[in-house]
Length: 72
Image (cartoon, rainbow, N blue to C red):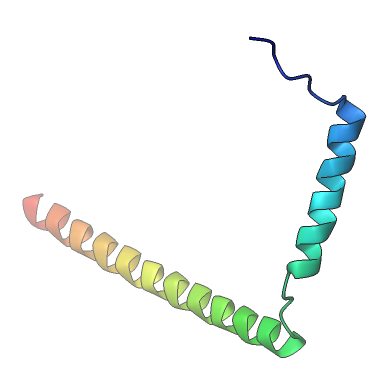
């Protein structure tokens, strides 16, 4: 069986760029309000996990310190 001949690299690249442009036309971009709301949710979630990690770290450090003082 003979192999099907592939188009050269320039033809394939041109096809790729055309496909990308077609897909980009289909994208539904978020509104400014949606971006701001999503950013706010991300920032609040980040602060929550920072505080949570700080609390767990402080508690763990205290417990380990207490145990090491008892065990002497």
